[in-house]
Image 1: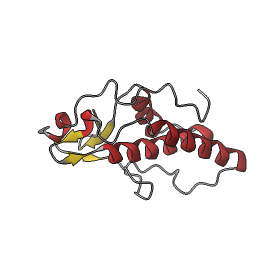
Image 2: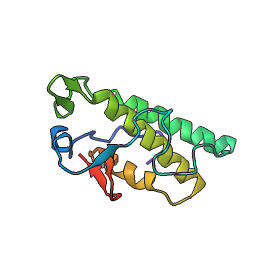
Image 3: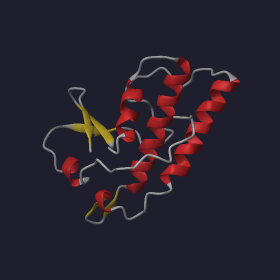
Image 4: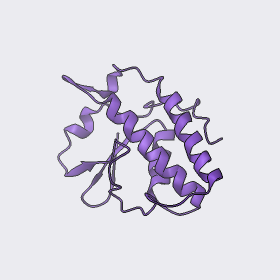
Length: 138
């Protein structure tokens, strides 16, 4: 897949309804859904210096994700829970994970964000992490 080609992703195709995780009985916390949030996984890629070509590749990937995520309707049925709408949280989380994954890729480092982003590519939403470190995947 090219850095910016996300047209083939069928967002949320393999995901359950958001209520599945919202009504879970185990303790978990949300993964970031805003670019400004701190990396909860302790990844050291937040303030790394990228070369110009690496930075451009990450930027193109982010731009491609933005374009692809536009296909998700604001009233996506899997992301509605009563009066609450999780579409923007999903999009923000996908962008955060995509950017972190891109940084791990260009630096050729092992990290959790590549694994997390692979769930998005499969039509799922890795929305959180349990206290024991297991991913909460919708």
